[in-house]
Length: 386
Image 1 (cartoon, helix red, strand yellow):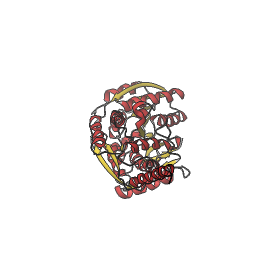
Image 2 (tube, one colour; image 1 turned 60 degrees about the vertical axis):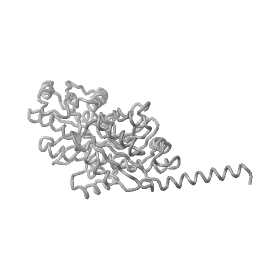
Image 3 (spheres, one colour; image 1 turned 90 degrees about the horizontal axis):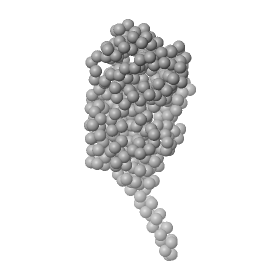
Image 4 (cartoon, one colour; image 1 turned 45 degrees about the vertical axis):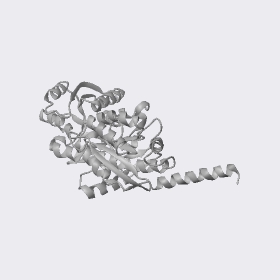
């Protein structure tokens, strides 16, 4: 036998050995969520959805290690460092609040571990350079949500808006994106205020907004802390339309807000309004299947957008892992690098909250099929046509 034939047989045998080893390897998924603290309403439902994930990914046994960061960015970074250095995970899922996701860029880039976040802000993935090349995002961007919201405002006669948002990167992102689309549609922001997630009162800020006499007020926050400014607006007699962001879509928002949040207008994704989506929406089938399964397990009316985002992580991983296994064995740097690369190649992948098409320059991959308007009607989140 010639040396070249021996070499070819050796290479073929090595490739088969690599694939066989990968076929029996366990994929480790490290998860960081805010299951307690101000963002708990978001983190708990995300965790619930993850507990429904299958026990295998692309035919490989999967281990899911879920940690709570208490809605604290510092704790999130500690959790992620532990998951990477001690638990040797192949991918990070989370965090689900923007400040924590931005802080997490350091460890995931340092250890070359892909991260699929559950936040709304695009700041963690844009621009695609430096540390951000290791980050991906499930939720629709604030930019796309601001687009659909301002289009609805313009179509319904809103000319002036008062803005009140979280005093953090979530509020920063929303003010920036909303301002761009408001300018485009000739909507003037007549007053801008901020509040903290843990504030007990926002009366001063609300009085300043109302003094500007806007047609509508936009509250840019997430989870149950968003109820406080809305309740204060109602109590102070504001008669204009009240808009919120996609960060409100939890049962706790409606339960805590009660009659004060009835009529709230907000942009959202398919899962939240799955049952009232138009029949031809491309994600309706997947959204409904998830909603039915989730509510069978956790109760009627329990589903959230955040649960839908978490549910979508699994098909994203299934899609990318199936290809990444050809490059390396789980638990190795080669596999992590390949997984990051393959997460950039989702094509028309239907998930509960939209249709994903990623690339090297787009680590979200959602288009306007993932953005719809909703309204709180009779104590439920309902689809609202433009």
